[in-house]
Amino acid sequence: MYITYYRNQNEDSELINYANLLVEEMDPVWRQIEKSKYTLSVSSKKLEISQHQLTSHQSKLLIWRWYWLINEQTANPYVAKANLAFNRILGYGDDGAEIILAAPYVNRPEEAAIVLQNFTNDMMPAIIESLQLARANDSRY
Image 1 (cartoon, rainbow, N blue to C red):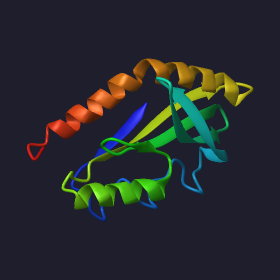
Image 2 (image 1 turned 90 degrees about the horizontal axis):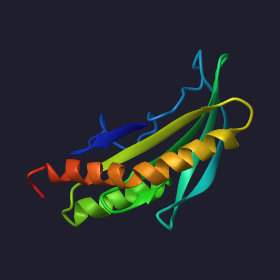
Image 3 (image 1 turned 180 degrees about the horizontal axis):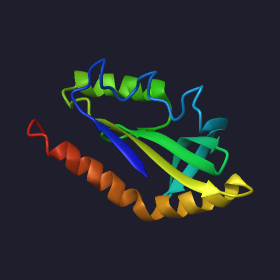
């Protein structure tokens, strides 16, 4: 699990940015072999995320990636950017986070998807609570 939290965003440090890549195109170790949309079911709610398959000479990873934006979650960077702007206009601030989960697999990415789904089911409440607490620690709110 890797979570990046952004507050008081600017050009050099922002949640939605073309430079925020999982793997650079010419990375010497990792190569992205597939990217797709995937729908999770978490606490009887649907969440569409980005699913990535990475490979290296020694291993394969299934990555799930999406954005948390105060009270919305999405994998769509355009929706995320619009939500950030809307929250800023309404005076809610521009807090947001990118959530990245990864699990290795040997033969089929479905092996890792089961692990990631179980982890998400177990940990999503704690992840969201931690993000909300981080936001609450800003004295403006």
